[in-house]
Image 1 (cartoon, rainbow over the protein chains, first blue to last red):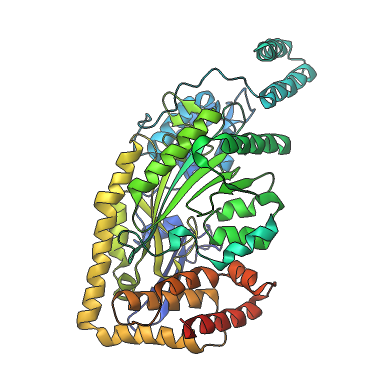
Image 2: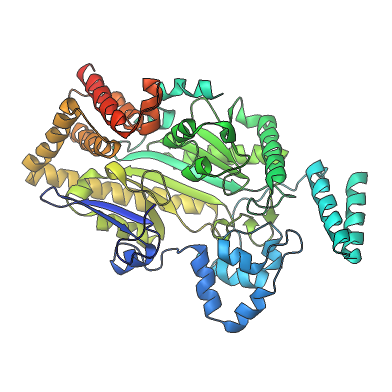
Length: 165
Length: 353
């Protein structure tokens, strides 16, 4: 994976090899932005999620400040970490970062805000796997170590419920 | 397991058979669904232990699922680089899946029309492949696979956002429809911009042979959807079936007709130069092979070449790629040795079919 030939800064994601009428091969390796400027790629084409987040945050300083304090209780990822890597940490993030993600998803998904299509059958009451219990126990240890007894109590109750189930 | 992978380098998967509707221009149809198992973190936050738990949970779900039948299960983590590349060349796993680290697996059926990647970007990436344009059939099969997996595994699902994915740009249906096209005439007539425009109008992406960030080698292009939320799977598929693909196929057919009518000498020259190189070259890179085979394929489909077997040609596209070539030779080869082996292999295949 090389750098963009035009701006020499961003990763080239757009690769085209043209053969002109004389049979000469011309290769172009451009980043999304330069490809747009060269007219090879749609201007509204999806840019990476990082760029969505960047532009969104840049558009609102208050948003940036608010986002910097957001953290998901379940997996511990912060909104800033997500912003830097483009990948969420767990399914709960969709609610933990709801306000920020909503705008981002809307932009990435042609203004769509709600799922339409297949939905899984109502799941039969299943036993959560041992992995889930193990994970909660690990969180419990961490909560105790951090002397967060309120959270530890919640986790203990949840583990008790699961082990009874 | 690795020993077993050598055998299937000898044949092309079902989807590469060069049959199916519009197969002269539409190489293959692929549909992929991204799914994650509830109760686990996404992979960016999962430690080695959790990754292994996810892989075990996914694999046991796949083994119990009723409609999947007997699949070949491969532990990608334990494969050497050559075998991983072999799977990438066969489109059974992605480049990203091959190159990442930690517990990751793949399960696929013997015909290679369906595969489930475990621990790629999402816990599961289910995919179905078909040769030619077979969107309806591919959707029916993947829908079934997904439903029977959902009986075994509880997928992360949100009342508003649908199936939850590690990257919010895949949320909702989690569907990626990709149609691979062979467009040599449009490249020769410098009309690829028309294809880009047709895709742009429908907000679809164009990529190279192996998807994201890969070059369009040998005039092969993949068209795929970007939007995954707010429209149901069948509507997303219908854009391809009724609008975009027929339009692009028509452009390519017209470009082929125009070449035959107005520039037949230039067309023949391209085709016969390709044949000359394929039959006589002593060193050949995989890119050059791809380009020559592409022109030969066009020559066959516009009726300017008669004595080449289409199946042989399809197999050559696959078997001249680096990992396949080394598997068939039965030894590891450096770049120059590969160029020699590739040229020799092509000469022998084209002289006796």
